[in-house]
Amino acid sequence: MSQPSDIQTRVNMGLAISIVGIVLGAFGHLLLLGLCVAGMPNSSAKQMAQIKLWMLAIAVIGIVVAAAGVGLHRAGYPGWGAAVNLVSPVVIFVVMLKMTSP
Image 1 (cartoon, rainbow, N blue to C red):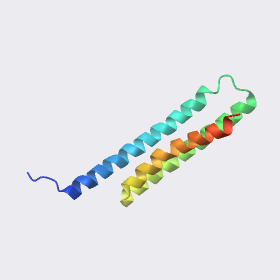
Image 2 (image 1 turned 90 degrees about the vertical axis):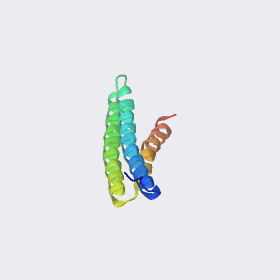
Image 3 (image 1 turned 120 degrees about the horizontal axis):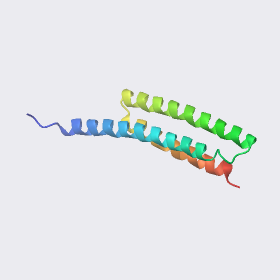
């Protein structure tokens, strides 16, 4: 049995990192949806409509970003696929904080 080459090991690690990045990005979007659901019980009707809009936007962005990550992964750019998926939930969270803080 021959040992894998250094290049093959790097390729395999890049693909593994990409897959883990896509999964963690999807998990981050699910956590943001959970954050929105947690804010619903004591909300007025206007706030409830805004939260539902946030939830829709987070879900759509999450699906688009996951698809982009898979596309980048298949195109041979696994690092970019992971980066797109890991940065997106952080950016959404920062935007939510800026827009909702007094």
